Image (tube, rainbow, N blue to C red; front, side, top):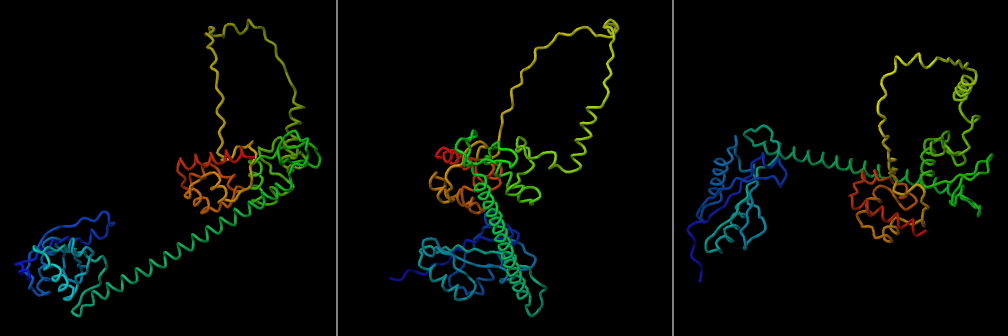
Length: 372
């Protein structure tokens, strides 16, 4: 038996102004109202009723049906949002609404966020809007491609730099590998100057400083010449003959001034100064200063001996590091432990590592050292 035709359909309207559409989706707030119309109304009549509600609620300066996007849905009958722009769309809505005992339709009305040109009688306003939006979309597409290209170029540049550093570290390790079994330093790598047979231990930190100076140019360091750095102060390499002429001249003048300056001593009786001496104050007990804790920003301790040379994937798998940690290291160009071991804690923070991920990295490096 055919259901009796209902007297009216209730339309629940959610209206979004142009100012709301400029915000992010989560910040949108709708103006809600309702409208009851007979199901046998023509589409043009329904459009006019919708526009009247838009005018009453949003109060735009000018109103045109084409300035808004209309869509609808019916809970439990038509859950997905359907557009409402033509007479056929309206007939499809009525077909679904009349299946209900008490027809109710949710209608969503959104103002189009597009800059419109000047209107005229021929209706060129909407063409201007369309062209403007197309131009904006093309410009945004070009900007995205340029931004993506710059990111790829930057990543390739960082990867190339890391590979160059890795190659130089390998060269230094191969060149200064300590083959002396009776070496007192106990390190796998030692520097031995051509004029001094004493072994100078090369730790992980020494190699990092050496490579950093080498990157600046051969005049600062190379495969045979270590850098002029505080870490290498105990190394008998930087001799007076290797210093610049200006430094040699300053050192010579200083030594000459110390050795030739006359020393004059004056003796005065102590009674002469008694009148000027203040009363003796109580001597306060000296406060013992505790030595400051020695901290280092390096992920690998300076005196530690590196473990096996693993790739990034092998390292993350062997020491149970998360995929998020592996992805961040890979995005920054770190390919294996030969470069990971030179990371500083501050660099991990710059890469976006969380505190727990930094702790996981420290634990992994500690176990890697212990496995050697």
